Image 1 (cartoon, each protein chain N blue to C red):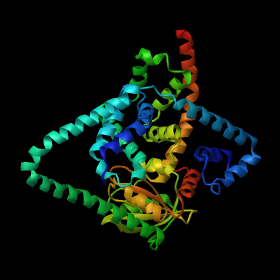
Image 2: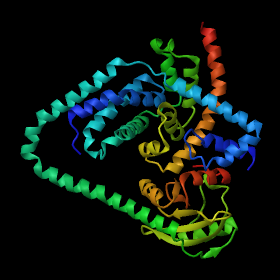
Image 3: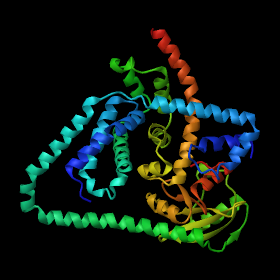
Image 4: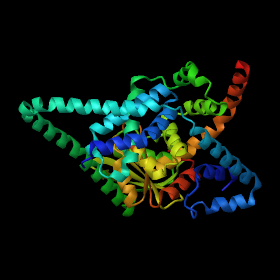
Length: 241
Length: 173
């Protein structure tokens, strides 16, 4: 790793960070006066920002205004309670059923996405195409999706060694294995998955995930390891979140 | 979960300063920050049954503040220039603001929301990656990457505006 990459690591470090993950950085700092000076400058600047950011305007009346607003809300609720209770029960029950239906379905979908992605990460299927030629891989993906396939600009520098077609929550998807890193893969789902919490729960159980979306497809970087290890890999490969 | 009015009022007293501070640095405007803080507590009160654990109240409130901020941003898409100018038009604040504070406002205003929001949470309250991840509803890896890049951008942009502001303040005197 050269000094520029270590500087990216310096920006990622914060007091209390996992010492093992950042050990290579501190080994480098011990032998590189320029980077050590940069690290010290950044730390000093951080302290100054932390000091400055504490300076916020005094507003002694804000608390009382909030409490007064809450008191008003409560008073209104009490005033309205007898009238709506008497005649609105039926529409209310219908609304509750609708809300429950609408609320539960996305959660089930999220849980399913999380489960299926976690399974892909822990038991990756065999590759259907072996190639390190990026264009060839993307052309193959296009044939799976029956439409053009491209990657978001944040992933411009990634390289692949193969791919396979999969399904995630009934959506067409491809799993691309990364070159030079067995633990990393990219999942492209032919759908706009807006709920990130499915990936969040997956991350807590099975590995790490970072995702991008272009509104039509979702691109998920999967990493069999901790978030810090994935972050170090992303820095190394020039991948931006 | 049942939360009594008394408990909720205690949370207002305990966290209003925290929410106001975060909103102040997100928006760069005292007026917007006050409005956001109030709205966040009102919305939190209405949806208090969605809080599952009392221990998570801080992150829950910041998450609601973030939703309110998103609603406000959608209504007025003028974050880039107006707040700092707006502040400069408020004489009672102008005298209070040091060159460092103005420089920080100006540098934060240059960042987009993806980077400014976690950065303020990181510096203002020293929130952990996990807490930021929960409040912003983002995977922890995304939070780490954004924070890392945001810190880099902030440190880089802090240099130039600081000089400009120091010069301008000196001129005003």
